Structure formats: structure tokens, C-alpha cells
Length: 414
Image 1 (cartoon, one colour):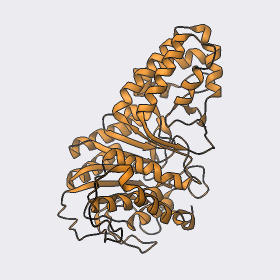
Image 2 (cartoon, helix red, strand yellow):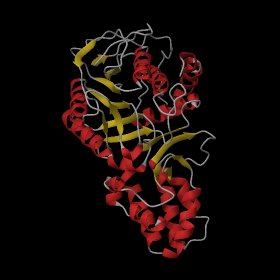
Image 3 (cartoon, one colour):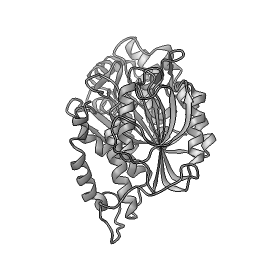
Image 4 (tube, helix red, strand yellow):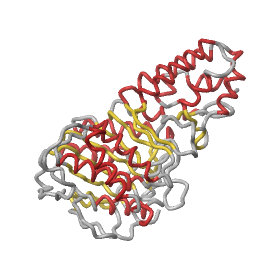
């Protein structure tokens, strides 16, 4: 996406959020509410002080997204850390980078110069593999431990493929992390850091899946992700999240400067709201409460079992699947499926379990938006092939192991 498109809505976003701070997030106010306050204060990155938020950008750019990920980093640098926020990035440009090669850890400070990262380099990492779970765990965990904060957000920026995984690194050997490896990495990071992630953000395609939320329910409290592909300058995938995140960070910093608390749920909701200003590239985005992921899986399991108990319903269920909002490949909207089941010729138990699932989705999804490209999106997708059932790799996911969802699909679609 061009810089012109990225920046054209910033003034409106800033104005909208500033006007609605009190009503949307808190009634706390002070006398000095001027948004012209200087956001950035002096700090010593080598002697970190406790701040309200730590935001870690894990930027895995050793692939064909390198230039976009550099632009994301450059854009976030225009905000930079302030008295209430540590903003740190593990940024890998691999062999492709034109501004720098290999990986570095930056403590982002406010800098307006475009095309160059002028923030302090905390660590020169050289050639690394950002798709290595051990590397990811160690570096994120170290930063969580080093920079004390009330809350922490980790934003993972790269390619995404839903339950199949995310994060691609091409050097020294091509590697793509599967969901089990992502879970392993984040669990270890949380162990090293000594705390749970408050907001986990996916600047990557297709990660707003029930399977992803379920796998990561013990490492983060809230997750922000897209059901659909994200656009990057005309590509059908990629990273555009920085425009949204930049404006949310600006507003959050201003809110905290006037003593308005920005809690994890607020932060997650703000990201989704801001993304609505970038619908040319973001078609869906949702914030979900991962503490409800277990309950959501239970309702999915109950629905799947109700369907399995009535083979006479299989043809109707198969048609309902094919009528369900689809995003990419075999990924379809879970809430829309539950809605459809309540309107077709199936038994009352299936309809009741579908209704209960729909209600649970409303608790799980704390905020979502979708464009008219996906009018039936509800904020959470799920594996839902139209033919042949599920793959062996899908059956290895926690979600498939712990629910009857895959067995139901296999029976209905055989």
C-alpha cells in the first residue's frame, strides 16, 4: 500500500478517538487534556523503568514481505516509546533487506525521518531464523522480562495461514511455523517473561480461527486477528496492520497522559475500531476473549455430537456448510454456520446447540468489523471444507483432538 493511502485517514482517526475517549473507555478526566502535549519523554533503554504498556513487534521479514515489514517498522517509529509505553521490535530483514540485512532488536523512539530506522539498536542478531520456535520464545521472553510493564502486547507480523500456522523465514533454510510450534514458542516466552500476554495481535492473514484461539488460550488474554486475507500494496496477502497500530498507539499514549487507563480489552477493541478506517486492505478484523476459548470449543463439540447423532441430517448439514460465508480455501465463518442451522430442516437438538454456539460466539468476540465483501462474518472462522472431510494435519490440532468437529465433518462430507 502506498504511503498516501496509509496516511490519508490519520487525522480523522485521531480526531474521532480523541473526541470519544471519555465516552468509549473511561470517565476519568484531568484538567490538562490538551492533545498537543509532548508524548515522548526522556528514558534510558538500558535501565528500563516500569511503564503501563510494553508493545513488542515481532517482524519476520526474511521473505517476500521484507519491504512492507520495513515500512511497518518505519511507520511505528513515528510514534515511538513514551513515558507510558515501551515499544520494542525484533526485526528481521534477512538477506533481502535494502536498509539493513539480518535481524536487529530496536527500542523504538519517536523519529519522523522516513526510509531509515534511527532508533537505538539494543542487539545485533545477524542471520537468524524467526520461524524457529526456540528463537521466537527466547527473544520475546527476554524482552517481556527486561521491560517491566503493567500490560504487554505482542504483535506478530508476517504471512499467516490460520490453523496451518504462520511466520515464514527463507534463510538459511525455508521454514514455516505450524500452529503447534507457535503455541510452543509463546508458552516458552510466557514462561521466560513470567507473565501472560495481554493482547496478542496478528498482522497476518487468516488467523482469527477458533483453532488458533483455542491453541493459544493459555498464553494470551485477548487476540486480534483477521478472518480474511490482509492486503499489502495489491497483493492478496501481507501486512498492513501498522497503520492501524500506529494510530492506536498514538491515541493510547494521549489517553494515558491524561490519566485515562487503557486496559487490555480497551486496547484490543481500539485496534479493531481503527482498522475500520483501512477497509481498502482490511476486510475483517476481530478482538476475541481467549479466556472464553475453552467454552467456545465445548459448544462446538456439543453441536458436532448432536449432528453425528442424526445421520438423516447430513445432507442438510452439507448444504449448510456450502452456504456458509467463506474466506479462503476451506475457512468459513463459524457464527454464520450456527445461524444457518437454526433456519433449516434439522432436529431441535441441532438447532438448540447451534443457538447456544451462536450465543457463546457473541461472548467470545468482544469486537469485530467486516466490510460488505463478507456480510455474514461474525469474527471467528473455522475449518469447514465442502468436500471429502478433514486432513491428517488438521486432526493433529488441539481443537480437532479435543472436539468432535473433525469427526462430524468427516462423516457429513464422506
